[in-house]
Image (tube, rainbow, N blue to C red; front, side):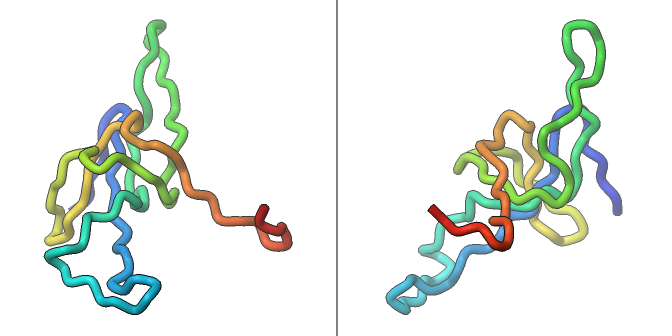
Amino acid sequence: MTFRPLHDRILVRRVESEEKTRGGIIIPDTAREKPQEGEVIAAGPGARNDQGQIEPLDVKVGDRILFGKWSGTEIKIDGEDLLIMKESDVMGIIEAPVAGQKAA
């Protein structure tokens, strides 16, 4: 099945967190929090402004994003748990560091 979000909504797949802490302690599924990081797998065309023109979204398919703990609505498509949320629920886009640059 294909799904196309409307207006300024996006479809997000959660990125699973690690099962171990840095100290090597394994965290069971029942104690693990749902990740607040995900990958955009579909995006709508954008919202309309006051003049009726479509304003394109800042996020695009393939972006890794951070969102709030209670953001979005959980849905299941083809047996996969996904989130649908408005672009305004996104706190930021995670960008990979450019090769050759040193971290500050």
